[in-house]
Amino acid sequence: MSETVPWRCPVCRAPLAPVGRTLACSSRHSFDLAKEGYCNLLLASRTRSKHPGDDKAMLRARSGFLSAGHYRPMADAVVDLLSPHLSNDASLLDCGCGDGYYADVVQRSLQPTIRGIDIAREAVRMASRRFKQVPTASFAVASTYDMPVPDAAFDAALQVFAPVSDAEVRRALRPEGVYCAVFPGEAHLMALKEAMYERTRGHKEPKHPEGFALVRERRLTFDMALESSEDIANLLAMTPLNWRGSREGKARLRAMDSLVVGADFVLRLYRPVD
Ligand SMILES: C[S@@+](CC[C@H](N)C(=O)[O-])C[C@H]1O[C@@H](n2cnc3c(N)ncnc32)[C@H](O)[C@@H]1O
Ligand SMILES: [Zn+2]
Image 1 (tube, helix red, strand yellow):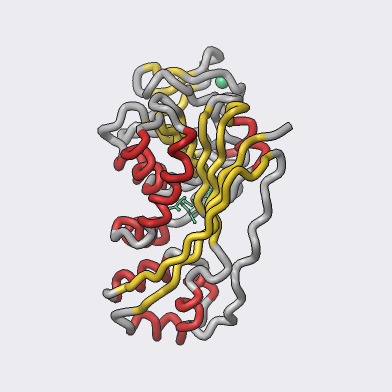
Image 2: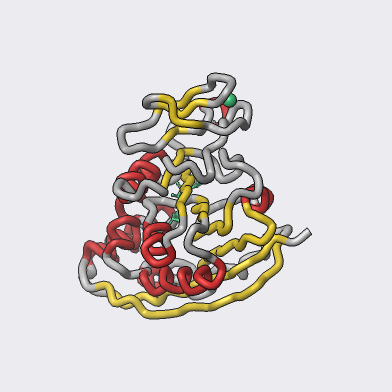
């Protein structure tokens, strides 16, 4: 693990440092490093579920869909928003990092040190595997509502479609840092909902996080031509429609082998304010 931005002990908040195959603090709280290099810093006492966050099927579906490049224009737009604010040795915290797809795109273009947090162990495992060859990247199983990171440590924070605590993001950022947040726009995946005859209510306008001032906002819309039943099944399985939608609607979608779906994203860049 890179020396810059150590993880923090979830019990006593002291910095964690590598000791053999563990990360340990000065009070000897110690956390095993998995073979993929990540650490589980989620205390069992702080979670009700045994497997919190997205499940394996959802993670695999999202990973398959992202790796097919369907959301790549959004990932590139994240890079564009961040790039004026990240110098070469900058650090980025990905909150709710999933399989690390966006951190990967940002890392390849802007080379920041990466720390990524997700509450789903499988997500963190996938992200760690992806970054195996990148010694400056490190991932932990943890909640974005109680992040095991130091105060004022990061030049940038990223959140793509993940639940976060505004106060925690603000705490983790340097005063001059930036926070890039991506939300679904009103018409996001409307064609998917229509194909399921869902009541087509659009996404609500996302609220601005407390303690931040908006620097830039960008609306990004584009059509995605899904040309295999696998792509369609992956998109369905990675959205809440998968458990909300009707059985007939899902069957109808699964029978399709092509579908054009509009993506609609709201990308925002914020700065912390007092
Ligand atoms: C919609 S996915 C987005 C993942 C990733 N940012 C992406 O776009 O590919 C939301 C992610 O947030 C994670 N998550 C949900 N609640 C969380 C929490 N309290 N703390 C950390 N991660 C959480 C889920 O496990 C899931 O990986
Ligand atoms: Zn400790």
